[in-house]
Length: 436
Image (cartoon, rainbow, N blue to C red; front, side, top):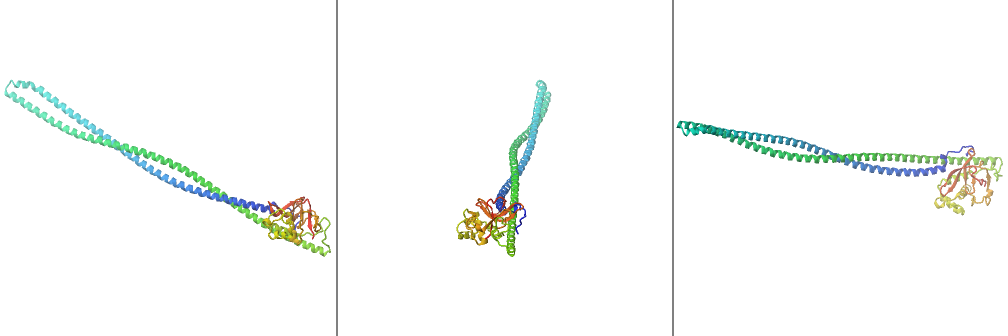
């Protein structure tokens, strides 16, 4: 049954607020899903860029290794050609020295022969002159001496010829050494040029590898950031879905609670009617306080059920004929078949009692005023109708302890229909109970 001393439930138990929170949760879930999709796309793009950069880095490192090997080969060749050039220079120097020594020996031999020849001439000239004046023996002696001198000169000439032959061989060796030195020098120049080119290529490969390695680090960082964004998006989506599930569960629980309240209220009403009938008391119109007038919880039950249809607020809807109202009720107030606040109250009373009040809330004193009795907000019961200068609805629970009551209403074009709360004083035009 309805509790008159219950405290006001928290805002999380307010069905209208739960619906609003569910709508927001759906928006949050869609946004989180969109962010997650974007994060997945960004992560996939980051993976693609990372893979491409890794491939380029691998190629650059292979190129660097090749360049280093080429440079090392060029360095080795440069060292080898430098050594060959050094040996060729040494051989050329040795050959030149040998030629110089040979030439010196030839020159010395020539000088010795010339000196010896001059000495013979100088030594024997007086004897020649004497031989011309003396006997033949002296002439024979002179001839023998001259013959010996010729023999000596001839022997020296032979040594000189041998020296010249050796000198020619040395000169040939020198020329060969000079040609070898020139070839070695040319080879060294080529090797040096290759080394310079290899060094330039190696440095270029090192720069390319360093740049791509830096780019790889950036791509890895970007990929990690994208992965973190994706993880955060997934977390937000999970939280949004969990929140939505929790709200759905709270809505179901609140619906069940309100349904139970309405069921208990109807039982209490029937018991009260039975009690009063047993005591011989009539249900009358009452005289103002409403304390002796039984409430009509079935109006609250009907109002609550209709508030859950998800219908549309349409200003002026439900003010026409009864058949129009019935058609709107059959359509569950969907779309253009919605009703406004007073049309909603008219439908609730009609659904619970079968009586059409025609236009509840426009003029409470006209037509059907005799079917209602005014009660205080503190005495309000499920099924009572609250009325303000601009709005009306059906009370489904009253909490005097917190001076609030819960209502089913058609709110506005923005809020639609549902259940909400009001504090005492809101019904500035009064609370009215159906008495039939």
